Length: 113
Length: 113
View 1 (tube, rainbow over the protein chains, first blue to last red):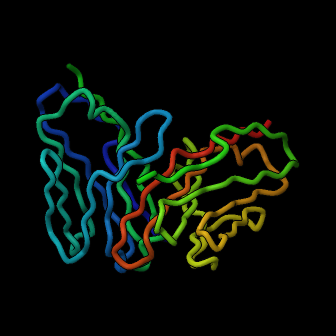
View 2 (cartoon, each protein chain N blue to C red):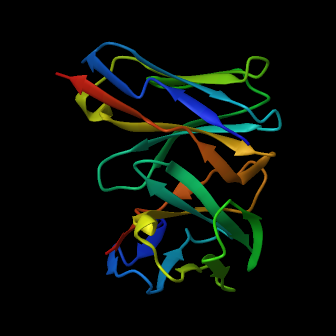
């Protein structure tokens, strides 16, 4: 079945460093790839998303890249801050439907001051 | 604009009971999706409703059901609860379809004893 693999499962960086999280997906029909940040006790919050007609998207310190040929996409956070500490999830739409997302297992990011 | 709201936030039930969870989408949003989040399985898609009709369904047993009302509010029901149903149940809404972004609520934490 459809699958999204996410690496690493945990990531620890020093404040000011960059963090990179990578995901691969299996469904060739996937055309929408959001990234969510989840803090303790809260629901996932969308931080950035990319669609299959775009290779890269940037929003201030956050960027996402997509390689449809290789079926992988990555999240890049630059100049990390302690408040970036959270669990990050990548997701891919199934069969082109954005209401049906398959998620990676998550990456716990810790930013040390 | 108010976000997605879910009630109740916490719930404790015993095996064999049934439970109903409620979700109010963002005003103007007509699509509601439900997800189950557990430490072992991560975030898994349950189903999506749009204009009172189930549009997509994940791989969950028939004990899990849902519905959507004319005001777009949605409920999900789990019958004959099992210990493994203990999870955070998340609701997400989006305007309609296509390229709309999905926004999550804070979730309902269900504990089955």
